[in-house]
Length: 379
Image 1 (cartoon, rainbow, N blue to C red):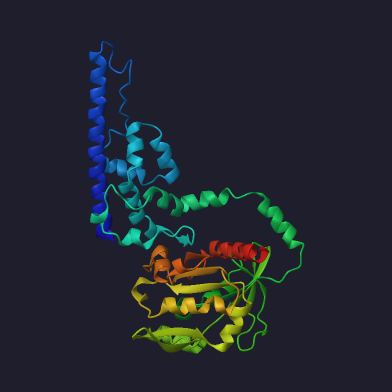
Image 2: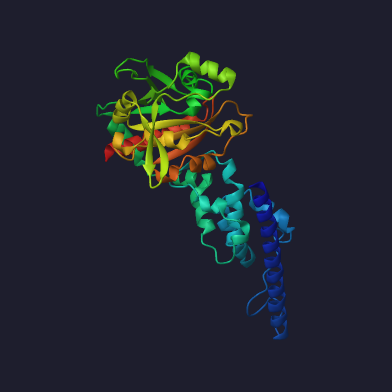
C-alpha cells in the first residue's frame, strides 16, 4: 500500500505539472491575442489570469500544502481561479487522498466506508474514464465532513432527549464480546475504574441464567445503559493465555460442518446461554484485537456475524466495533481495513472506533451507539 501511495503521489505531481504548463501556455496565448488586437495585455476580451504566489510554488510543495486542507477548503480553493478549479477537480488527486488518509482515520461507519475496490484497484487501471467519483467518495468518508454533518444536526435533539427523559423506560442493554476482550488487558475493569470517563451507575446482578445482567454506566451524567460482558473463558484462563501468548479458544460458539455444493463449509452458532442474551439486547459491542502483529485470527468475521445474526433477535441492531490495542505505541490495523476484514459492509448500522486499552477514545463510540439505539427504539 505504501508503494502504491508513493506511485500515486508521483503521478499526481506529474499530472499537476502538465496541467500548470498547459494553463500557463493558454494564459500567454490569450494575453498575446489581446495585445495583437490593439488593446493592452489583460485588457478587453478575456483577461489573462494573474499567477498567484501559491501557483508559483513547486508542484510537490503545492501538493503538500493542499494535504492540510479539508475537502471544503479544497473546494473553496477551486473557486479562486481557473487553475485551482482544474487542479481540485482532478480525480487522480482525490484517489491519492483516499489511499493516503484512511489509515490515519480514527473511526468509520456504515455510511462512510469507502468501497474496498478503491484500495484494491491497481494504479495502472486508473484513467480518465474512472469508475468512481473519488471526490464525492472522499468528501463522504473523511472525518472532517462527518464532523460537520454531525454538528449541523437540528438543535431540537436536546429538547427531544429531555422529553424522552420524562418517560420511564428501561435502560438500553448492549452485549460486549470479542477477541480483543479476551486477549488484551481487561477493558471492563478499566471502564469500571475510570469515573472521569464512564460513571458506574449500578453493580452486576444475576438476571440472565449463566451470564448475569452486566454493569450499568451513566453517560455524560445523564443517560444510563447496561453492558453485558460475554467472556468465553475464566479470568485465570485469560491471564494464562496472555502470559503464554496463546490463542484463546472461544467457548461461546459451536462449530458446525455443512456441505455447500461439492465443498465442505464451516460455520459457527452461538451456544444456548448466549442466544438468550442476543434476544434481549438493544445492540452489540465487538472488541477487536487490532494489534498488527497479532491480527491473523481464523474465522474472526464469522464469529462476529454469528453473534449478531438477525434470527437471534430484532434486525438492524447497532454494532459498535472497538478496534483496540493494548498501548498507544503498538502498531495497529487502521479502522477502515478492520471494517473490511470483518465484512461489515454486509451489515448496517455499525461503527468502528479506534480505541486504546486506556479507553479514553471510548466515548465517541458509546455516544453513537446510544443515538442509534434511541433511533431504533423510536421506530
